[in-house]
Amino acid sequence: MKVTDVEKLQQIATEVRKNIIEEVYNASSGHPGGSLSAADILTVLYFYEMNIDKDNLKEKSRDKFVLSKGHCSPALYGVLAEKGFIEKESLKTFRKINSPLQGHPDMKKVDGVDMSTGSLGQGLSAANGMAIAAKLDGIKNRIYCLLGDGEIEEGQVWEAAMSSSHYKLDNLCVIVDNNNLQIDGKITDVMNGQPIDEKFKAFGFEVIKINGNDISEIINAFDKAKEVKGKPTAIVAKTIKGKGVSFMEDQAGWHGKAPNEEQYNQAMKDLVK
Image (cartoon, rainbow, N blue to C red; front, top):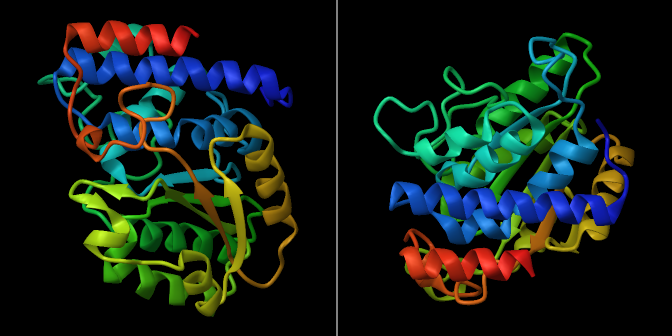
């Protein structure tokens, strides 16, 4: 199902955010902040952009997604639940022993997860491999990789970026969730990676800058990225950490902390609004 109605996509994104809060609350642990900031991006990817559904999971020709910032698995599980890959009730088992929905996604345990991730900085290398393999096999699919702006402090990201450009991977689209916060505070204070857009340009990428919490801008960016030939695309998406939950928005303290019952109820009220 390809959803083109912006209002419908916004409604789905809200449900994804509710799923995120449900997961971390029931687990009493997890990473809500960066999951909430990425919810709109993942919603557009799975409900508008990517050729992926339950019927084509085993087909080589379908599009693939790598969540490089794997600690934000609540967002991925949240959108997979809305897509029908996993039961919504199972979200309450997040991070529980014997649950397939672990703190970092496992491609061997969860349908719709294309790469097991968690150790930061490695996702783009895996996405490169997928994109190169597709070109060698003559497959016309696209590969998407979501990076965190704190994550790009990892040197391997830039080694991978060199490879993306060197091999002219125009079937690869990188998205940077630029919420400007990581576990220890502002990225500009911890290890200033700005200007992110100019760095990717210097590494040979076509760069598109957007508001990553605006559904229309995300759609337009993906449409533009498909038109780029001869080089990869990086979408630098400015977002708000904790987006949609009043007391979590733009607060580094909610990088890796679960809400208590009172906070859970308030978060759900915020999202209903």
